[in-house]
Length: 585
Image (cartoon, rainbow, N blue to C red; front, top):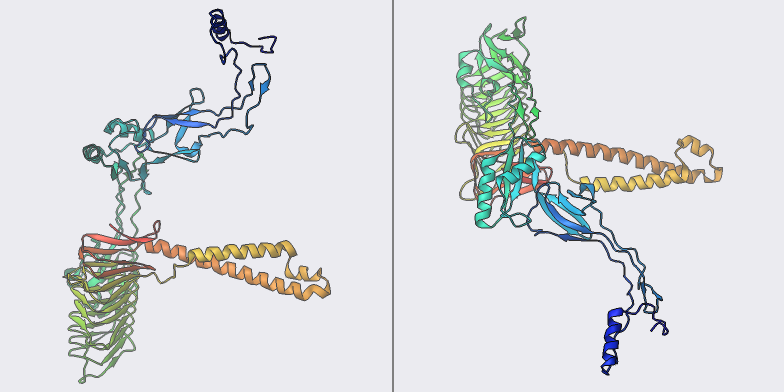
């Protein structure tokens, strides 16, 4: 065989051939020598040790990384080299720092950094976290599965160890144990399980203005946040000269909270009440007590309290009295403002009975002891607040709040502040209710499905952000092209170094660049306004204490939700900037 050029005959095989030959048996086709085949390159691969449909925990060995194999030549039986079919570079697999996994370089084992689901696509491995930390760090929620990646049951201790490795120190064992039990019993994952919960700080209590005189104290009422608003029912209180109006109560300290990681959460300090003395109001030297300098009517303009001269009408505003237009002060009407009549005053207007289809305009507040009932005509307009017991088919506008105790029915009301219907029946039924700072009601709509539209609007356009950003990108590219062609010198310098024959063309280009720069500044301003508006929108709420019925339409900015099923209260609707949708909780 060596004479035939075979340098590495296979000894055992050759012996078999010789044995058969001695026995005079046929040895045709018997293998007497073997070469070594070439090895092609092999890509790196991962061999997983469990079921990727189920979660892994911190420290779990989830897979082994098999390194890439390099191509190697073989040899023939004569010793001649045999090259591999391809000399391509084998693909590698890298475990990224951000993958949620870690590779042991010695054992090539891959371990999980925390609780999550293994995802492997296109040679890229990541572990998708199953814990979600709330933005305020007061809660961690997660999805609990019936078993682990390795097929073993999940226990409370396993979850606790993972949370502890994250630095979590305030665990919620009861809901966690309940979810684990249910997942194991049903074989279904449990979403949104609270696994850790901190303690929110108790914020300091703001200072307040406490009314002193008996009539106002009897009329004071709390709003939905249980904060006493001294303006709520004292707007139309007649007062004698020298009477104490009220006093400032200082703020109270808050208490620290603690987030899920054991860090202190600093409470917000209580703010001093900002109440200022207006016309005809005396204040003590320490700035605490406010008294009336004249006999008149208390009126509020935002946080400024004044006592204005008052016109007192003992009956109705009707044919007997005619229209009423005041140049100064406020008006107290014992009766009603009848159909078709007009009342205007720079201060407050108070009707002891009702406002019918009349035109009523106040430079401050409007109050009605009864209701506002219209028949397709008339309008109530206040630069301050409007309050009444009920309103029907009414058109009401207020720069402040609109407060309706019982029913707000088939009316069109617009408030730059809030619309509040909670002190009596508190029902908004039909019509359109628009507010700039929120809507609070006991009930919205009816079980008959009456269309009732509630709209929150901060008065600034928020749509078109993506379109503005795209336009800004295009303008930047256009400006960059112009700057690249002309340079960034001032227009004067550019024109001075431009040949006379080309100055007109260059001047047109410079004019275009100036227009681009101006438009870019306009876009930046518009984007900033929209960002601020979005922040303000996210704080607004439509709150319902009892029930929001089918037929209720809630619009916040350019988003709309139509209720087809009753939503039991207490509940609230608000704009979520993360999902850019209206959500309910």
